[in-house]
Length: 78
Image: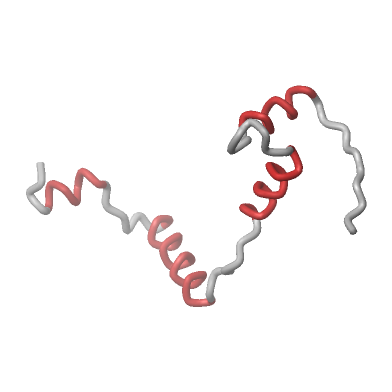
């Protein structure tokens, strides 16, 4: 059996939680549970993905990037 506790939140926070309800009768606990579950990443980045991100950041810092406009012009999409 789960224990129940009370927490203090501002009325502004309560109003924000109310706006996030999927339906009017959804409990605040269900809203908070959904938010917490959405924040947890079940699939952490692989080493290969991290390396690709690092390489991409290095390209950006070195100026090896193209704007969308440049690419569209190169492909004759303008």
